[in-house]
Image (cartoon, rainbow, N blue to C red; front, side, top):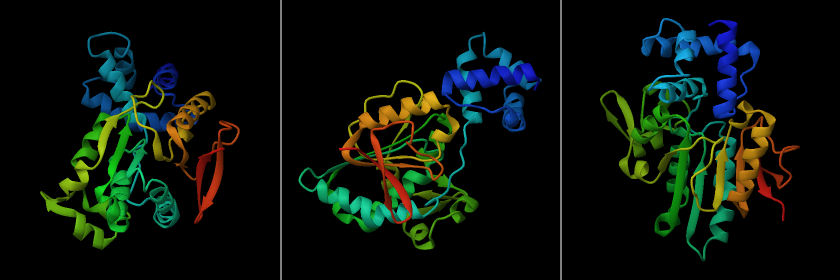
Length: 272
């Protein structure tokens, strides 16, 4: 990829996905886009980037390029501490506060191939059986249709299963099918997977009790971070919780939030 091609890619990602691709990441762009260019029948990455500017499939090609450049790294019960905090304090508090309404709304943003929402779904089943009679709204979203397709299928390789999934949960919630492990239909149906571009207009969603948006803001520039956090502040219920990645913060970006510590994990709540 030429320097001009890389500059074009940087602007495309910034304009259409809010992603700030730094200059030293040219090698990463080449590693991720070379297979896509070959798959799409282009002789080079530059030729593929040129094709996004005209032609009947320009918009679709642009989307595929953006999807290829988004990070899909994930695992079951990633980092563990946040899930311990959810089990021990956050979810018990929310359940107690919603006992009269018997309704709970959760959103996992940037869900990649689905391990995060499925981890949370298993945690809910294992530790909070009283939610069985509640109205549950559980949305998981990503910008990538390819990732969402994988998440909806809920089928994982042995290597993916080995990354964070306790053996008892594997036995209880997965079935071996065609060399992969597929999560039970009941859990798959409990989650609504949607394509949402965080930098574009969001579809209607109910006020949320819990939002997980982990390891996403680090890829955006400051104005985009501020916009997203402002929208989160309007979507989160006054006593709800927002969970960001360990390297992310609302500090100096959105003054509606305060940080609260729970079992080595930082959550955010609205000031009130």
